[in-house]
Image (cartoon, rainbow, N blue to C red; front, top):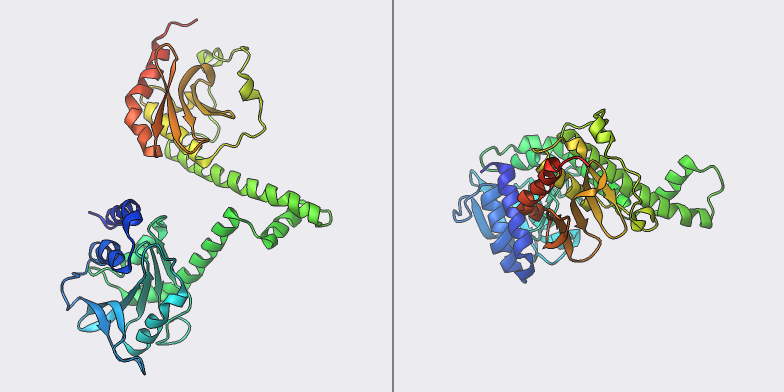
Length: 367
């Protein structure tokens, strides 16, 4: 398996088993040891490569142990301290790493709960572990841009000098990205005030702040949706807004009275998950029809995927505005059957039915 594939497999294992992991020892056995062996490539059963419960006398702390030490050429290169998976990773948990970092030759220290891995080095002062990580790997949300740097710590291509030289840039880029992500998720007052000043010329009063708090939150969500939409369109080779000159397509636009729910826009919010579901459906059926003919229409109670933007030609409905999500499928009589799904990937299991719906419209005589 390739490095990225092994990382994906471990992330899947973490998601599947995290609910059953209750102790630090279980975390080490289920998640951390596989990370050391499968991702970094070291033999966890070879004491010349991986030393569990590594001990070094540190001042008055005699006999204190660190969870793992990774060795190369008889020298400690990486120190790993573990916490149980349900415990947040905090710098306050790194006291042993601080002490061991100062008395060993290690240049890399890792603090982890098996799900989040924080990588530290000594950028601020020689032989003294930094207070902030230069790289954060979250197996629940893997940042693909970090994979090349992570590979440099693996046994086969271990390149300490390269990763140390890149650590400064990684540290600040990673921190900035996390701040931006936080502002997109829950914008702070300073961020709201900054953006408001760019578009609003009046006084920044309490009322204005309250108004723009909602506007900033909504705008950032729409911006992210737009970015995802653009990337998916680019992947499918589609223009930003598909233009068609086919007279048959133009003739499909009717004056039929639309469903009343479709006219009521209040409360309608197209989610990122609905857009992803739409693009999955479109990718499935594009073997039978041009992607530009597969369109979307959001309503209060469901997200519709239509052929030729015609509400009489439904391909599927995404009922995602509830705890239990459903995929609405249609038979030849246009009767809908709701299928419960647990993830977007489940849509692929109904590819034949989706293609069959499209083919039924293509084979039907023109009215």
